[in-house]
Length: 356
Image 1: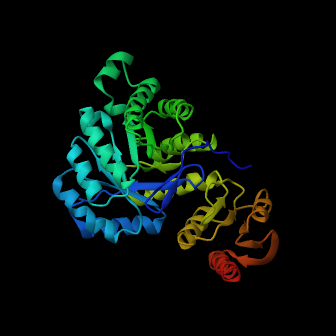
Image 2: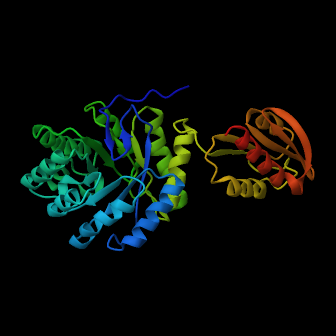
Image 3: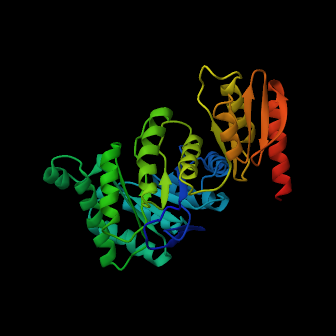
């Protein structure tokens, strides 16, 4: 069943469409020193190869802002400047050619500073993401609500949206992030009913790879399944490449992206007569760079294995020291266990060639 996405305003961030008319895009953020142009560009390209579509980079000082033209010229994807506290850095980033701005208006300061940024963005037709985080809410809202709440996040965002709208600026994206999944879910659902702007989804400070993946999948995945969300960033305390892998898998699991290999593998149990874990890991590693959408089954026994393998584009179902190779739902041949990976990968390459 197709997910019916919430209708939004649509616009471009560089070459990438944002809004319900375009695919949900994947973002990440470099962790390099932006002043190091070569290192930043190298990481941008690694992330692009992994499937990242929009990159955000920190602009904490003047020198970082001055490095932007070189980085943007060498980047293969749109660049968003991440700005905090100093409105002059936002103006510098716009002058130097960024494709988007991410601001937390609550820490930019006086409204006149935000107005100057908006006017400059309006002149260049550059979108702004209003980024509200539960950890940096305005003091008056914390006093009013007692603590970070969904209502407080939405109230903060609406205040800044209203300011931008009064300036006749509507190239707006919104994020309402929290490390608490139920809080972010409530905030995004609430906001989605109030404004027509695209929503940038994320669970902020989600944690290390395992726990952060779970929190992100639950938070981001729940909203996407409800049709809410237009671009996503998985925030993990690890190599940003892992963020892209998790984000892509969230989208793939919901049928929102049809790209790359989807491995279907059974859990280990006492019925298994081959090393399913090693087989699945090796197959995933060997096929990770393939872009063609293919469902590959790696099954370990005769109970569910053959049925699942038949449902996939191709797969293997193991027995004692051997396995069956399935292609398009039909048994193709029986293969010794030590040759299963080689035979399966060869079949994948054959399918790719036949479809090119």
